[in-house]
Amino acid sequence: MEHLELFFKSIFVDNMIFATFLGMCSYLAVSKKVATAVGLGAAVIFVLGITVPLNWLLDQYILRDGALVWLGSEYASYDLSFLSFILFIATIATMVQLVEIVVEKFSPSLYNSLGIFLPLIAVNCAILGGSLFMQSREIASFGLAVNYGISSGIGWFLAILTIAAIREKIRYSNVPPPLRGLGITFIITGLMAIGFMSFGGMLTGGDEEATAETAQVSETVKPALEINTDTENDLLEMLENSESNQDSLEKTNNEIN
Image (cartoon, rainbow, N blue to C red; front, side, top):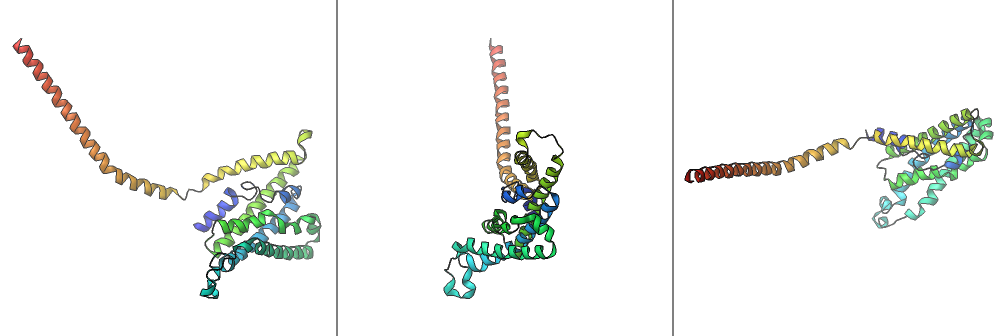
């Protein structure tokens, strides 16, 4: 369940483009054609799926405070977290070079269409953001790190594929001249981001907890409510008695008069 929740949350709720607006330069530049968008999106999925788990291992066993304890107790106090950016970017650059070599070898046309944006994946803030989010959100296991990397890549792929399909169709639309190009693209992106916000209600994992808490609170409050009810009944009885006494006094006064 945890893997499934993280998968859908990374794609729809915490989408790299529509929630945090990371990787916008490649998103805007390479989204003119669907074929090019598919190629870059697949490359981003691959790079995120490899680099996030690798950086998770680096963070767990080298970078964080006390991570070097496996080397010996004398290394337990070492904190190398200040090297996070350098090592994360080094890992990302290595994987991007691998992707570039593979794409150039097997798909020269895609390599030429992506142009400078393929090597620029190394400095794409969405790629580095995936590793930094993994670190800040304290992903608990290697499996979850793999899940988070792939699902974040799928979210970015979905975003660029959608905008590329819309931009191909919008060429035949009567867009006002001042909004043509990036203007209408930004507007569509904003509207899509608003639409993706609706997926925030899809994850209701806390409902059971909330129900349990409500039940616990009700059990705590119930005795107090019962006491209040008893007190209310006593007050009503006293009022009734006082009314009957008042009626008796009025009757006695009438008889005397």
